[in-house]
Length: 503
Image 1 (cartoon, rainbow, N blue to C red):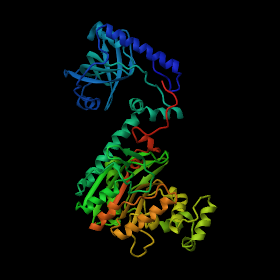
Image 2: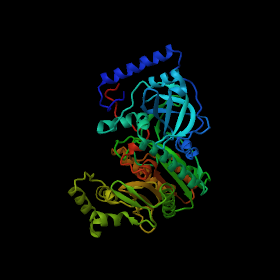
Image 3: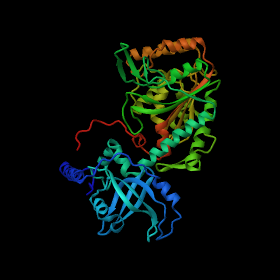
Image 4: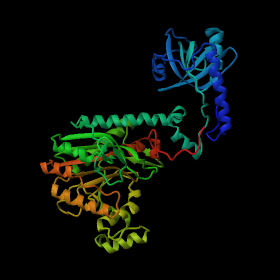
């Protein structure tokens, strides 16, 4: 008897569990192992459908197959029954007749429950209704399920359980399973794309003595053997750039990062990034590369450059617009050319729209506060926003024509930052000065400001070739490509608040 919803009372759930536990003892007393070891299926449900799609109605193939799966539906009758099994590739139907398998095997089947995992052997045939099925000649219980599967999912409380008990979500929710498959395809595509262009995949430390490469608050830990404080990395950037110093011209890492920040539909404290670096390239080269890479990904997944997201449609047709931060503030934020260069006017504008901007903020920082509030959500894109203020880009190269901004871009799609890239700062003196500015900001209470990494400055003093680097948020990219509105949909096990109670 399945549970009607996750809100079912504890007493009811406990009662169902107890009934199934008694069945476990009954099986053991009858000499059956309810948790058997090993069973090697010959093929999956998808391969079954492909290989035996030719079987005609009311025809039975001579091929004898072994298959397995979880029972997700049963229709038990007196002398013959049907069940639907689910494996990693999908669902398929089985038919079991008492006159075929005998009283003992048929009796076993009738004692099974939805949720049990079974192994079967039999022959493919097509029913009179036209459905390809497996005619069972033998059935074995592999795993007895003690908890009933839910029939329906609806409401906020159900969403909470979907994320908290992802294994259950994957059993009953085909869409959730497809997101996992699509995510794997996306990661594989990005890896192959870069490898075909001579990028070398590398691994850098996840525990770092100095967290760097991003503006974020790190998680802290302590290594007792070394007797030192360590941090979970917020980005791999400074280590990847050390590899450029060491002579590797093109490197990338698909990495896990950790940032001690809030949880939302767009943020999870543990997330996945693709970061890649190219010696002798510029941020403009990476704009071209990013267009090529993501357009290729869309074609690989959808066969088209246009696909739905939310209530709208995304169009990846090239070329993608490129706008400066200044132009975006004027176009989308309603600011004038005169206001943009007047710090007092920018402060007044920020106060008018309810922003709490510190009085010591520079003009560039006020720009970005206004950008986040007035512009970001309007960038359906894809659109490259470039030339960010130097104050908010401590690792990026200054623009040679206007040293108040940097050769940096962010890619926005559907109102979200999806990628961040820049021509790298290679001047060790400038880098030290910017690190020191960050240290002063941290001393003033900015917990997300960068630390001073002396070893990285030392690496730059040996000489790093001119280069460009980019980070792409894998989770946000998967959200886009699977039409998911929350990051929790695309992370298998998202972080949750402590569970208040459970059964």
